[in-house]
Each structure stands twice: as structure tokens, then as C-alpha cells.
Image (cartoon, rainbow, N blue to C red; front, side, top):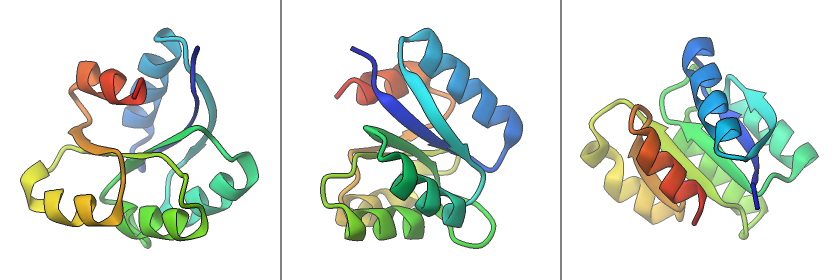
Length: 116
């Protein structure tokens, strides 16, 4: 059964690619956000099964947004996506309690983790 997913990505092109991959795999994209602040608002409104979260965004970044979401909902499921050096963020990502960190260009790994 597909998951209800909120996609958070500041790049419109990358956001569309991620949404397309998720939909083709049978998931429902219930919302999309281009900033951490917008992600917080949409999370509270939509209560998705999963959030895919970009790390680098203007204003509130993905790490801070993930931390805020998890502080408000301990059961939130967040998958961090990045095209940056994953190891640079690994310790911090593990500490805040998201389900994983994956390169946003590795769609097979994204789908594997989305299926959790």
C-alpha cells in the first residue's frame, strides 16, 4: 500500500522528479513545500505518513525543520535527501531521529527507505 508523502525540496525541478518517482512507485504525494517553514505548516495540516526533506534550503534548513516536526510529533517519519556529502551530516541526522539520509539522485535507495 502506498504512503501519503509530503515532499520538501527548494528546487522545483528536483521536487518534480522526486514526486514523479514516488507516484510511479504507487505513493500519494499529498503536499509539496519549498522551505522548512512551509514544511512545518503543511505537516501539521496534512499529517503525512512520511516526509522527504531536503537539507539545504533558504531560511529554516531541513535539519531544523525535521527537528521541529519531530519535537511536535514523535511518530513522524522523515527521510532526509541531499546531493551534498552525506557523511558530513550523518551524525547530526542520526541524532535527531529521522529514518535515514540518502543522496537525492539515488532513487532506488529513496524508494527502499520510503517502503520502510
